[in-house]
Length: 331
Image (cartoon, helix red, strand yellow):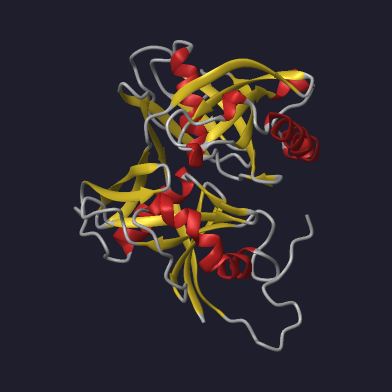
């Protein structure tokens, strides 16, 4: 039996596996990601594939952190394998750690939940009011621009890193907009762009090849900055409002504004002059607010504010006589 606690962040699912996973060896979380397919891929398939999941499912295995400086370690997974980063998942892990009592929190203040993930050490800054979680800010690994105007698949993309490598392009460049009615076309473009970028020098991580390769393609629309959803904006400089959809793995669609993708977008926008807040909307209307918390030698440090909500607790089983086994996907 496999136990989980499920959340959604901005509409994007996040299934936290709390029991039933075999041990995954490794000296650190990044090494455990390398070893996970050989030791726990059957659990990933069982929870991510139909009939227990779906083609856009997402989740994580909890693993030990790299050292005592973090509260948790996490291996993020989706229908096609294991990813290097996940901002929406980190937001959910912060809420989970506080709500389950794994990290003692200030009932009327902010508490950092420190999480080791394959791309490095990240933080979920959990804000509580009256003992209840009211918001979570994901503090990313340093993020940066890798290349601009890379010619690919008949168009040009900007490539940046936010814990994973993303290609960004305005949907308007393709004659489309970020709307549900255009998702099929956008997924098709994402697959072509990602395939064409395979092995491209701009998709190599500069320090660790295990983090190389385009994880997702971000399509965005610019929106009027003077008509933002409720919430405060930074007062020091330009504020930007965009709607995006991130298509990651093999055609998987992020319902949230994508946490690590937002970090990658902030790196591009900061490089272009952004000094205020990015109001980042998703294809389903949910919102993250992102800003640059600092600048390091490696890149900017984005802070991305959102919220996660628990949707259920589950016990999953696999009947040994079930001919479907660990499941299937239809796309």
